[in-house]
View 1 (tube, rainbow, N blue to C red):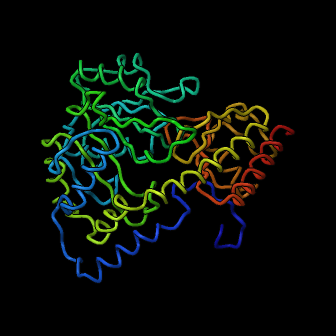
View 2: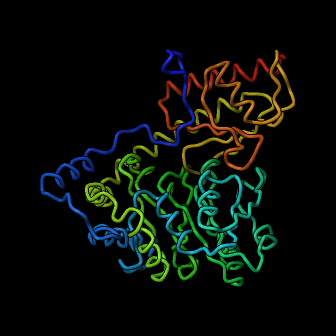
Length: 375
């Protein structure tokens, strides 16, 4: 549609709209100039893995050895490696819904079975301990949580994590914590990594993280995982046969990100919070629509269920997919339907866009729903 000259407001993209901070780019240029363009160790350069260890020591008092870290071509590859190393055919992984779109597919590709557990808006889209307990079977191998979450922006406090950890410990179940949005929390929300010593989850948890969201480095393709040495070793074997090491240039850039880009991260986070608050204010003015106040990430997940079952012209709206298509076709607003995340009746809106684009997008969203109310 854009190629045809149609003016699309795109609020579908899960990607920061900021440039990569200059010091990170400069470090990449220096790495090239210094000839650091060859293969590295399969699991990543020692300097970067040591910096990741220091990060966790400084931020949450967690102590890891560099041998418990693997650097991959994005957090997505770290997740893929983990499922390949962890699962045998028929093993089950509990996946709270709404979930990031690739979780279930990765589990299937590893021969496992995703067990989708619905969460609710009233519970802040967090996995509750009773729901987790009821979902356990003798085949349960792991549970995955996304903290903060894509698509809802919800996050877990320490007190939310403790009962989940206890249940997993009793059942001998592994916990995978996808913390890619850890730096993007708002309103003073106290992010808690599953690596925090007070949770006592280190022996049964794998932490997934990366540079894409917090440092605006999506195209650099750089992520990592921390966990028990045996699991990391298995992930290294998987990685050695599918990609080998991530880009050497990206790794040196990632080292610069960890060592010197904190101020830029705060600046981006503050801007995201301003955008979040603006969009929440606009959504609050729309009748028959609710939306939780997200604690982190850069997404809103408004409940549009009351608009389903309606029709206008030749269109009827039985799902959020129908409504998403309507938004795109009629008011030229791109969003992501909730079905993509395993939960119908919702639309994901990304506020990783300029304030002007968000204003235009909210105008179009409001207009489209007004038309539906008026038939």
